[in-house]
Each structure stands twice: as C-alpha cells, then as structure tokens.
Image (cartoon, rainbow, N blue to C red):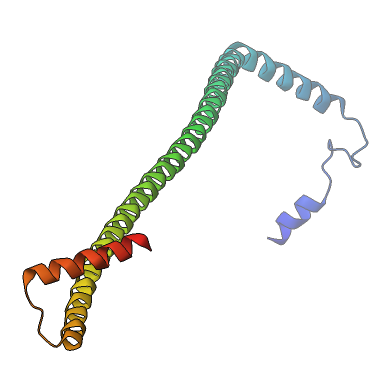
Length: 180
C-alpha cells in the first residue's frame, strides 16, 4: 500500500508538473474526443433533444392557451355571478318592498275593520242606552203616576185607581215633559 501512495505522489515522466503547463498530446486528444462526442451527439441525441424540446414547447403553448381560455371563462362566470347577485339583491329589495306595502295594506284593512267594529259597538251601545233611557223614563212615569194617584187619593180622600184616572195623569205628565 505504501508503494501505491508513493506512485500517486511521484509525478510521471509525461505528466505536467503544474496546472498551467500545456501538454500538446493531451490538448489534441481532448479536442478529438470533444469533436467525436459532438458529432455523435449531433447525429443521434440532438434530433431527439430538439424534438422533445419542440414537443414541450407546443405542450406549454397549449397549456397557456387553455389557461387563457379558462381565465376568460372564469372572468365571464364572475361577471355572470355579479349580474345574478345584483338581480337577486334587486328582487329581494322588491320583495321586501312588496311585503312592506302588503303589510301596510293589511294593517290599514285591519285598522279600518277594527274602527268599523268599534263604531258598530258604539252605535249598539248608544241604542241600548237610549232604549234603557226610554224604559227608565216610562218606568219613572209609571212611578210618578202611581205617586201622583196616591197623593191625589190622599188629598181627595178616596182611592183613584181606575184606568181613566191613570190616563188623565199620564197625559198630564206627558204634556209637562213635552213642554220642558
């Protein structure tokens, strides 16, 4: 193993001692190998590489065209969505306005119906009060007739209970109430 290390460390007879030293044999063989490799690659690998590159370029162009088309569709869908949202908002506002006006109309109808029922109830109450008043007046007249007859019979001393006497007193009270 020691020999192998010494062989690596010792410079050979044809090898350059410094990296800046030019070796014409190595220079020529490097160019020969480079040119041979270049022509082999140009004949066999270059068409395949060029074809793959062109196919890749066409695929990228197709993908870009597809992306532009999808972008245009997305913009169109966005505009359609905005238009639909605006239409929906407008119809919601219209429905709300219609609902409010319907509610106001319903409230007005209910209010008018309540007012009519109130007026009818008030008119009925007035009629009942008037009828009660008339009954009370008739009852009061009867009581007045009875009291007048009782007072008159005490004054006269005899009891006045005939229908003729009652009619006479009723006519008198009626005449007095009409006069006042």
